[in-house]
Image 1 (tube, rainbow, N blue to C red):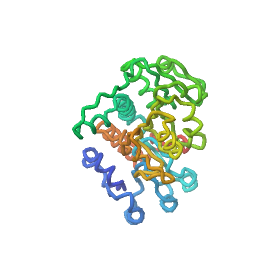
Image 2 (cartoon, helix red, strand yellow; image 1 turned 120 degrees about the vertical axis):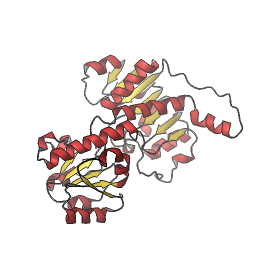
Image 3 (cartoon, one colour; image 1 turned 90 degrees about the vertical axis):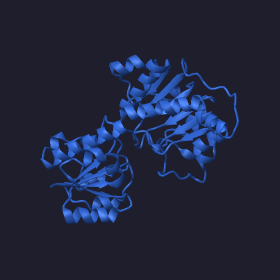
Image 4 (cartoon, one colour; image 1 turned 60 degrees about the vertical axis):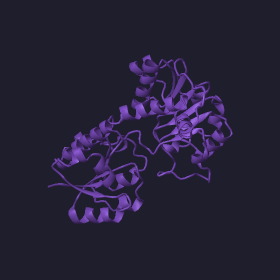
Amino acid sequence: MDKIIIQRDIYERGRGIFSVAKFEFLPFDVSEEEKMLQAHQETKARCLIIGAEKYSTQFYESLAPGSLVLRFGVGYDHVPLDICKKRSLLVANTPGTLDHSVAEHTITLLLSCARRILANDGAVRRGQWPADSGIEVTGKTLAIVGLGRIGTMAARIAKHGLGMRVKAFGRTPLLDAEASSLVDYYSTDLASVVEAADFVSLHLSVNDQTRGIINKEVLALMSKEAILINTSRGQLINESDLYDALRQRVIAGAALDVFNYEPYRPVAGKDLRQLDNVILTPHISSNTDGANRRMSELCLRNAEAYFSNRWDELNLVRELKV
């Protein structure tokens, strides 16, 4: 029976799918790199399923050439593709499996901020009965930064479900027909998209061009009533600059599901947890029953193709496609 090394938390998320598969799974915690590598060498398990966590350079350099690294999710910014290419490692992910879940979480955070859900919940629990006004989002402007699959889905919910006006930033001037029908204003100029927006939602991958794209200069362009939402990657935001902007009320608030360091720890001693105008969730936007099922099923299809030498059927990341 073919063996697969898998992150223990991922195995638990997909247990219903993995437990009946025709593979033998070897679960390990993220902190058990040495044990994973030992199992990799001793059992000849050449397929590994990992999450968004960052593994050491030595980990990838120790994998046998031809091994398959399966990313349970979409982003792979923590996978050193240069090393993988040099060592002839295959890297695949599960595109399209978490679009609904992440888009829904984006809108959940948007509405939670607009209606001050956490603040009002806390007040009632303290025996208070506040009369603070919330924000009605119908007619308000949502700026989507990155109009890929998830950004497009969030735009669809916002426009057709909530009656919002949608602006969007993209790195190319071209839009497909569906995106064009959803967007009231589109530009490759970030400043023109985020200014005057009531909500700004990030949906970009992390690379040299996008890392820290939200900084003090961009935050200063945003409305003082604006809410920043990030369900994409924490590295898109300069967290130190965001902390200052939130504390000084340069923008009204933020809702974050992803962070520079996970589990969360403050950058430069600036602790977002101490602020009352930010909602923080622990990278759970893709952690739903539906997304976990779809990611698990696609991981299995990739594994089956790999072990059957049908490598042309793998969902290889674009940088390593042959």
